[in-house]
Length: 178
Image (cartoon, rainbow, N blue to C red):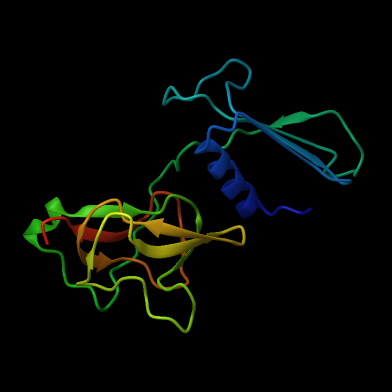
């Protein structure tokens, strides 16, 4: 099993959003242990426990003693840049202060449709209801349908199909009064 840096970040972010307190992955080449809780008795500036990560045997392939690795931040230190609206999106209006943002719950790839040859879940101007699927976020080869938590009219879609998204990045805006 081989992890690149982005997959490790996705794994840590996913574990951070769950009730899992410890996760251990083992293979012949390495062992990865993720524990939620203070690392050496410290607490992050936000007051939330800092996850501890231990990795052993990565370089040598042998079971060397575990060594702590820098803790992963619970949330991004700087907000992810919001891409410009898609060409089909209307310009923001004075009412956009009332719009509800639908944000990505994870790092992954944004897809507007369930399959390449199918129509998108929603388009600008569509009315949506609570529980309706609005997009898919693919993370670590898993397709996660994102359901609306608000009813209203889709006013903006801020991400292009197939584009990478960050945790907390705004994907679309909905006018709950629309």
